[in-house]
Length: 252
Image (cartoon, rainbow, N blue to C red; front, side, top):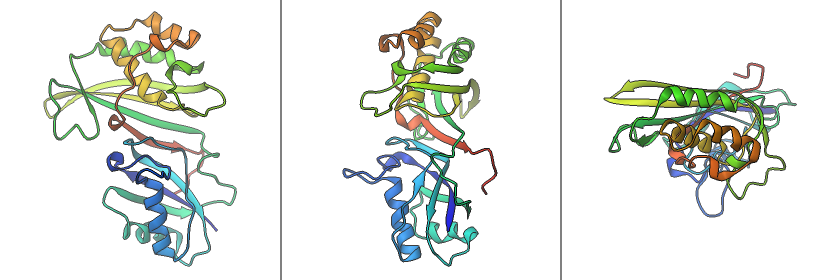
């Protein structure tokens, strides 16, 4: 029988989602918990790999196994054996044709920054301090340039195994607000799929646009020419969270 899991995790201590030889991954910890809970080896597939240090509020996974635990109780069985920084929020039976990776239609990521000269201890785990304050209106204007189907090769880090660098982005928004005495800036990106470090580089480019370090023309040309020198820096992993994955149907 096939099961689906809705997962949240703090990625600080992990080498990303996928099992690694040189460090602890979210996948390996979750599979170890499943083995302990069900008494058998279980292979768990996620909607996609999150990089080292990246967080998730709505990662979706699936696995197949012959077990006697009711689907809705699988979350409790796993959480009993998981560390505090990983939690299965929900569990459910899934259609046999469901694949957490291949069935995904949309993924939404959020990159978080806050304006401050010094890192705030209650913010710095999940957001990145930036200074001075960028022009939010200019960042919002630049965000619209990413919508649609484009070649994002200028936004892809070296080492990617992607066969094509063309991706479709459905929406990009930049919002700001205040909390704990700081101005918060969130960049929300929704798309069909993303390249290695693509969202973090988009966030860095919008930040540079707001700071006047790149121009709107640079952003436009980066999508046409694929020139890495036209984009901003790749922002640190800790500011990025996988917010949700959309399959077009309700799983939980």
